[in-house]
Image 1 (cartoon, helix red, strand yellow):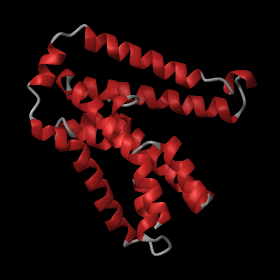
Image 2 (cartoon, helix red, strand yellow):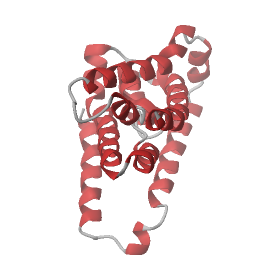
Image 3 (cartoon, helix red, strand yellow):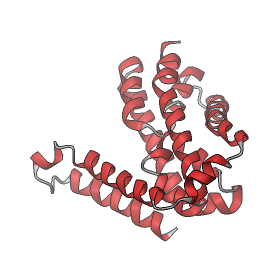
Length: 200
């Protein structure tokens, strides 16, 4: 839990630095966050590569766990459909479009803004950022009360990059391959589902 709070604290600190322009403008317009993410993924790759047990875990992985990405997608869409009943100002398909971001806020909010306007795009952005932050902050609680697969499902499309270190820490090294596989498939579904629900 402490590690998650530190990560989110750095996110909030970065938001304040950006808000008050405390960074040089040329640094803000660079691909600094992309390179930082690449460095993080490199470190995760090293930890996977140094552990010969990882490949054995993948071979011994229960084939039923391969259904987790599809259950994440189905569960999220069912939840969005239920939430739409309590939001008279928004249609079912608006709610499904927002939920179909699965935490991939940068891509999904662009699509939603293009198809449905800036207001729903902003809602999509905040919704998907919230999903990622919940996965980062609540991973220990999710594992404790709902099992080791819960942080992976909550993380959505982020489980192969930003939330992977947290998932590795609290769910265990044996779920790293599943987490990457899950993130890849859910990530891949985002542009198709978001544009589908925006177009209906």
